[in-house]
Length: 188
Image (cartoon, rainbow, N blue to C red; front, side):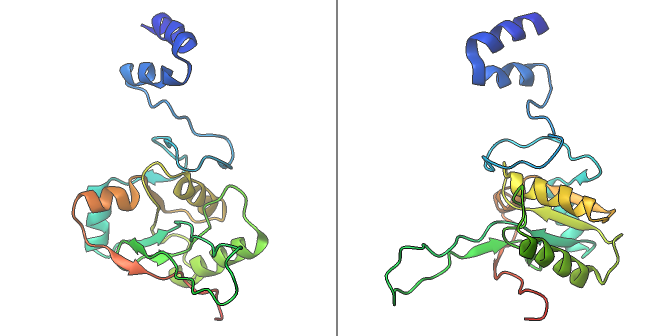
């Protein structure tokens, strides 16, 4: 089977992931660092140091108020070429009720101001307790949540859950969502 998969990989190229699935393996491996491009792509099944949370587990944690849910979905920027005076309305973001939305904190590289925004808001919502359970999410097949969870682990938080299915998995189970606003910078 492995040899035939290797041959198929040469012939099929990008479709070779089907062969990995036939062996029961996840075709996407964890990178050593952060993902810096193509953020909407299949994610690994794991994140070293974090626990992967299923929709059923996320719902139980949410019902029990046993975790802080952190949405890291990016916020669409205002188009730079809008004529002066044009009304701009942000696209609404629906997330898991009670979540804190920290947009743009899941990119592979963060500007210092964005990293400070992430650090300060995590400090605020955890009360400085780095052992509180944080459940990080975005959408399904979104590296933003994987990157953010990895970064939060690197910041010294020790109880990090990665909700890989994100609001896609949540909504498919007809669980409630609420319109979200980005968390303000600390002090605003």
